[in-house]
Image 1: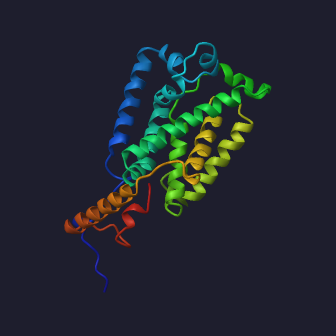
Image 2: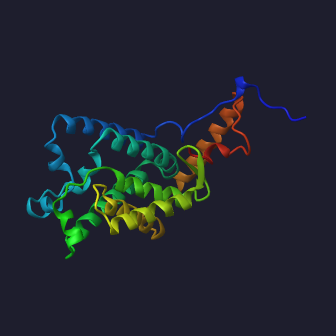
Image 3: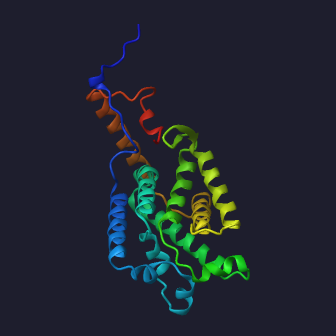
Length: 249
């Protein structure tokens, strides 16, 4: 007869665990900037991404600063939740310096994509030249791409109910961004999202991102220690001993 652990020894977890250093710093910075932008609305135009301001007012900092501004509570909540869920394990695996490089590289590349598209000689893209784009979504989509490449078969639970492998989730999100960008008439910066995805793919598949091999060793060692601690305190996650990192809810 199979014996099941008592309810006192069962633990349920949500997400990838505790905040890593870069994720924590990014979330704090984004929340602080969100509060500041609500108190000083004019800061959005100064720090947000607007191609016109970059070319004619030389606000060359905007491809970086736009990532720390958000329009609504829902906007920042979704982005910070995604940052934690998809970025935490990547930072543990790559190490903080490499993770920070990747995050900013994809975010800046997403901004450059938006700027380049805005100067194309088409009526559909010309309006982007005068529109302010804000949000960390470009970098978040870059993290999503990296997560899908690193953990391709790990289930992602859509609406916390429907599981779908991460690789297919990335494909779906990429397709949505592509077709939305083609017929974009709304306020969501789909071009920026697509730029983050493409930049992430180029960085990871092109071998341009330097990830320390020692970071991988540290991550595996940390995971081994966490597994050992879970067994010591009678915590059961079910299935294989490394199942704890196989699901994202």
